[in-house]
Image 1 (cartoon, rainbow, N blue to C red):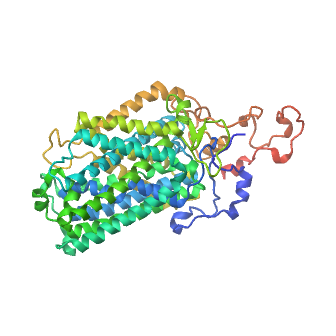
Image 2 (image 1 turned 180 degrees about the vertical axis):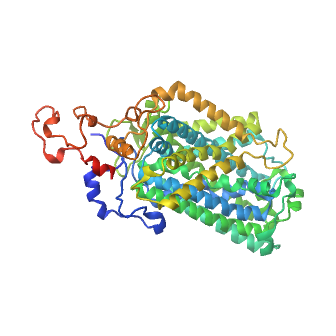
Image 3 (image 1 turned 90 degrees about the vertical axis):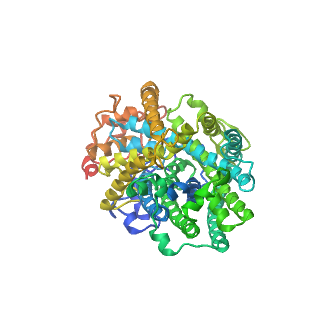
Length: 621
């Protein structure tokens, strides 16, 4: 019998068990939409092939790795410095943290209702109107995949540049713009991150927890030593009020502040990739939402703790502009000027490189799981190849062999290879055109934001009816507010992330991210009509019939989807070949045992074998 992602409960049993349902601890305003509404979690018809070993702490660690606060702030600090300085860095971080929490809360609520390894693109299929369900799922799935792959490139390539910048801090020979040397180091890091995913997957929980400790200690060590060794400090009023965008080239202060949000936007992302880990989480309906929310809150606080000491010792812009040898990262120069110690500065960079390594491992982990899930729904050509899974100590074909034991780990082996191969190919662009390569890296966050926005938009359009009964709930008014703020932020961040960082705009300084996004959209659109409409299907649900009936009672349009077929046809469901079609029965009159074909050796059916039944009046109430 096919195994599912969670133990499936018939409707009657689910209602009976609500009195003992445990709600995880979060503020009351976020927990219950209606105390009289029982938890109604949907379950999905996929074979369980990956190990369920991850906990809330694992999810927090993985999310923390994907956001990588100290590395994200350090590698992009120059954008905020030239577009407002202290005010932009400090208040910009607070603004982005709040809006990121809104997006995270929206996704957390949806993921508690639909705990599926398809994550974002499954949410889009289930929340969108049946007419657009397949297309919404296809577009969100591909934007998510492309965003994951390009984010992997961004973290690992910047990490490679940081590795080489260690040489530049004490040598006049190194230039970080040497593309071939950087590319070789980049390839080494990609391979290391891939090997960790292939050979140490059973240690994923440990790696996630280690990431939390490494990141927090990195922040504390850098902050404390900067304050101890620095001899010059900015006063509190300077930190809170100094706004200097003189190096931006003439941007209006408001526009300059918005552009200065780019570093925080680049950093506080990636949490939308986490729902794809649902198949490996012990209790996904509660652990994933809780881990997402806690991770964004902790990341926001960690960012403030990291940023404020840097602002306290930040040199004047003119000093930074005149003292930039060997094409060092601005943060390297800040470390050297503040500590006046090459050894301590190198130690800081090594700590930051360590966080980028955790980020690279996390990116390949989540990208491979999403690739595996998307291929399982026939979203990729050569499906059989990408859904292949392997044990740590041997080969296990998808659908064959024994189930993994607790001390073994299974991984989507070929999906991991693909999640390594794509960044390797993208890396070649750095040899051809630095502008094109930077555009690909810059498009990562935009692509992920679009993927996050599609299910949230669908949720708002259907007036939040389809998340009724989610274990993690936003009260009705708060829910609408959070969803609308999430959409507003996604639109604003799209604009912000496409802006050049300074004037005048030239061929070299132009931000080509919008060009990459347009190319992505066109390719996804063409592939939808060439492949997606014919081969791709939405999530396979255990109780799809009941779900469709509930959609009808909510007033959803079930007349057809973009293909002109019914929602049931576009989203296959499990049904025994001897089971009757639910459409053959009048909901007001329950079927009798004689209506069922019992197969060989069966002539009667006990009443407990009947499918869950609710009168039409009960359903509509």
